[in-house]
Each structure stands twice: as structure tokens, then as C-alpha cells.
Image (cartoon, rainbow, N blue to C red; front, side):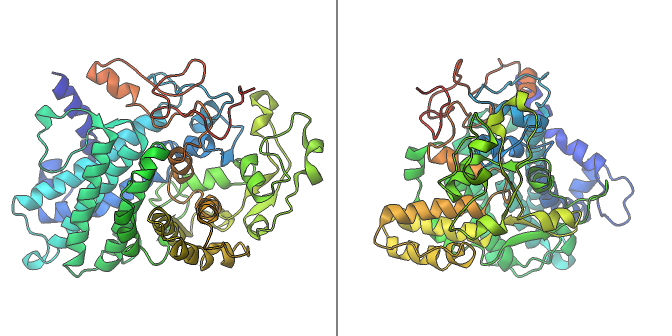
Length: 502
């Protein structure tokens, strides 16, 4: 019975998906799931909807842990309780309230559901193809649909593995009668294999995606590059601590970044109406005026004369009223001074003198603007980091000095003969260039370097609602006193800051 509950919970979401979203299928009115999965038109339409469903989950706020990860990483700070941000950024940190009644439980519950919905739909597409269904005239569109399904299997399994401690990874051949929860590492490994299968299809077939699938007519060559860069992401960001980061197969990361994106990966936003499909609520809410601000930790990185924490004496205790004097030109282009703060009862440690402005054009365009999901800079910096782990510091320094450090930051070149300086420059550039692009990047970077503030959870538990259905006991991670989870594996210790330290 437990297995039946498990299958019904994880995979019944596909029924909700196919029932609640319009499928662009000719001559089919209100198609039922069986018809969709047994017709070429239905499989093509389902495959074409997968990336949008993944995008809505990864770039959302209500249905994603992204906002709480942003504040747990001490990159951003808010005084609003929405999305669990106040709870998960308390100082000292507290454990995650993994109960179905928790007000913000939906942020991980819906993320879990939606990612498994993507996975199940991708599995269904591949099952249909394996049964002999050919798509397009003489099957000419079958490789396109198959490659897209493999890629979305990988992104769904992969992002579950990035966020949760355990997972139910699957593919089109999984025996669901014996499916059990496994470590997140199994989900990551399966995801990488699936992305490699997608790359094999992309590299051996020529096609262009219908524009509505990803808002732009991406070619098979484009998709191959995107999949390579996502593999590099998963390999690096899945590490939970520095030891795991050091153990990454950095030669493989280097090879995937060398085959990865050569320009920013973006889709086109389609506005802020209720019927819109391509809106990044994550970027909008975290960066918009009067909502999210920049944590003092980041201000201190730009201008070390400013403290990394808001002083008890308030604004008057900050040098120059908290106005940065930084050699980094981005202090002027990407940040705006704003000393207005509120809700002192929620902790003045949340206060700051700056907000992030790099997404102002997107916000002011009311979502009718490109949505960047992965910057070329991210791929370049992962390549540079791989080179440092391979002791190729001169090549790594060249990437940094030909990139944003000089072009946007107007900072002096990093010396190639100083390995520590090269590594520091990589993470400084990542901190300045990548916020609010892909979900959780700031958090993943802090996590894999043992830098998260003490008591921060290193991954989320299986959502309580799922545990309730499985008749399994609730569990959780995080906190300092009390603390739940294995130190350094489930909960951060010896990080960049512990407010209880003497």
C-alpha cells in the first residue's frame, strides 16, 4: 500500500498538469491523458510544454525555495515573511518547520510536486516513442521530441537532487513497484546521464525547436551547449561541503564547460498578466524597490570599510552613512543607495543601505524583457574553477582577466602566479555577476564552500505532506539550538558567521 500511495502522489500530478493546461493539439478537444500519450500530436505537445513547466517552478517565488535560499546565503535580505524568507534567515538560524500546517510549506511541497510532474511527463513522452510512435512526417520530428524529453528528465531529476536530501529518481524504464527514496547523489547521477543522452540526440540530428517551446527558435546545436552547461552546474552545485567540492570530477566539468554556452541563455518574458507563461517572479520580487535589499555581507565585499553586519547603533555608526567607496565599478552600476529600512522587531540585522538594480530594466518593462537563466559568465567561471582544481592557474587567470572583472568591474588583473588570488577572484566574480539568474546559485556556492551561516540547512527534507502520505515520520534540518541533521552534511557549521560565537 505504501508503494501505491507513493506512486499516486508523485505521478498523479501529471493528470493535474494535462487537465489544467491547454495542449496545442489539432482536432482534439479536451484530450484525456491516454489519448495525449498515444498520439504523435499529443506527445509533441506534451514535450513542447515541459520546459515552460520547469521554468515556472525554477523561476517562481510561491512554488520554489529560491527566495529563502537567497536570504540564507546572506546575499539578499528582506523584512517580509513571504516565502519563508524571515523564518529561514533568522539569526541565530532555526530549523526548518517541516510540517504540513506550516504557512510556507507550499514552497517546497509545490516545488517537489512540479518537478516530479515535469519528470513524469518526460518519462511518458519517451515511453510513447519507445512503443513506436513516430512524430512528424516520416518521423522527422521524433529526435527533437526525444532529445527534449531526455533534457527535461535531467533538469527535473537534477534540480530535485540540488534541493532535497533524498529523491525518487526515475526514467522511462523505472519499476515503480519497487521505487524507494535514495540519496540526492543518485538523482544527480541519473540527471547527468539523461542530459548526456539529450546531448547525443542533439549532436546527431539537425532541427530547430518551435519558438513557443522556449520562446526562441533554439537549434539542436544551441540545446547541446545548454545541456553541457547544465551538467557542469549539477556536478558542481550538488556538493554539500568543501570536501565534496574538492572531490568533483573537475576534468569532466572542464570538458562540459568547453562545450557549453557561448552566450547568455535567456528566454523572452511575456508580461505580467494572469495568462502569461514566461514570468520570472524570483527576479521581480527579490530585486524590486521596497522589497528585497542587498545583505551587508555583500556591501562589505565591495567596500571592506563597511561592516558585514548592521551596527546596533544604527545608520550613524556606518562609515559615510553606509555609502560605498569601492574600486569595483559595479558598486555604481548594479547597486543603488537606499537607507530606508522597516520592521525593526524582525531584527535590524536584516537592514542594509543598498538594493540590487541590475534587473531594474526587467522590472520596469513589466516582464516584457529577456529572462536570463544562465549567463555566459557562469559557464566561464565554472571553467576557470575547474582549471584551478587542475592546477592550471595561468589559464584560469586569463579567463578572469578577459571577463567581467575587467569589462564590468574595471578592477586590476588578477595575477596568474597566485593560486589563492585566482580562486578568490573566481568567487568574487560569481558573487557579483550571478545573483538571481539561476535559482539558488548564491546558496549553492556558499554551501559547497562551507560558508553558509551556522545553523543554515544544507538541503531541504522531503516535504512533510509527502511523508504524511507515505506514513513516514517527519524530519527536518537546520538550527543551532536545537540543531537537526549531521553537521557539515545536513546543517552548516563553522561558516562565515555565527551570532552566538564569543
